[in-house]
Image (cartoon, rainbow, N blue to C red):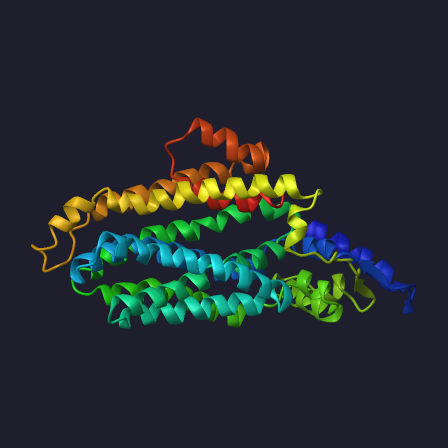
Amino acid sequence: MASETSGIAADSEKLSYQGQGEAVEERTISVDDAIESLGFGKFQRRVLWAAGLCFTADATEIMLLSFLSLTLQSEWELTARQTATMTACVFAGSLVGTLILGYLGDHLGRRPAFLLSCAIISLFGVFTAFATNYASLIGIRFMVGFGVGGLTVPFDIFAEFLPTSHRGKHLLVIEYFWTAGSLMTPLFAYLTLASSWRLFVILCAIPCIVSGILGVCLVPESPRWLMSVGQDDRALEVIRNAAAINGIDPNAIFHNNVKLKDEHVDKSNFRDLLSRKWRRITLYLWGTWVGYAVGYYGTILAVTRVFDADAVEGADANGGTPDFDYRAIFISASAEILGLIIVINTVDSVGRIPSQTRIRSRVPFWDEQFFECQLLHASKFS
């Protein structure tokens, strides 16, 4: 990295001056080249933590449904249909949130959509603790799901600050944060459910609160998005600041004669996904996402319900709180760690698409999450 940076700096010097103080023509570089020159350093790690904690929040808000639904089924004497609706409303909110917050991410900027998603999840995640009846709980959890629908935006921010040479590995590293959320949720439940489910849901909102704070303090707007809306100078300023944080002299690489190359962005809309050019890949990806979503979310919600009968039977003995097998749930979630380690170390050598198909078919007993989120996200950059 040092030799690469010094080489770029040397080239910049040649482009800036000839002899003593003689200026030369402006140099134009693409956003990809500018990001590549940053390498992977302190700046990207900051963005990783902010975006990664969104993944932790996503995992906790989904995982808590298994515990909360059974707890309230016992405490509020809910029917099976009401319990299922409590879970379904979060995914319904996520469907609506993805369409709206994703649109805002393209038109208002990645950073505003990221912070808005965090604010919605944090606010309504805490409001869940103050729900007094079933109807209010359904509305609040729908809004939590609405915010969860926007959590693809911080992933996009992180991806757009990564050099191409680092994307495969680091877009999988971020999934450790999801695994952390999967492990934190049963731990929070073990520590608090016996005394208060309200405290449990507040604890599950903390990762998103922290992510939002880090986003405000550490995450700038994506230079790729800024370039797409014609804010070239601001995009270059963001890249220069990132270089300084990574310990690179921005004046050496991005001196006054360096300009970012205007990149044409085609106008498009939702209907274009089903045009002749994109129809086939769109339908393939939709089918893949539906399969992974049903497989993964069905699995993690079923893990707790495997112990449904025992949990509800133990409710009377514990003052209305179901008796979950926290150890078994924790061990099941921890299986994701092994899968991540293997794929992170093979994704660049095996390839993005083969990682989803060959490895999964040979090791079918691994947790679905490792394949659903991690590899599909990485494959979009293959």
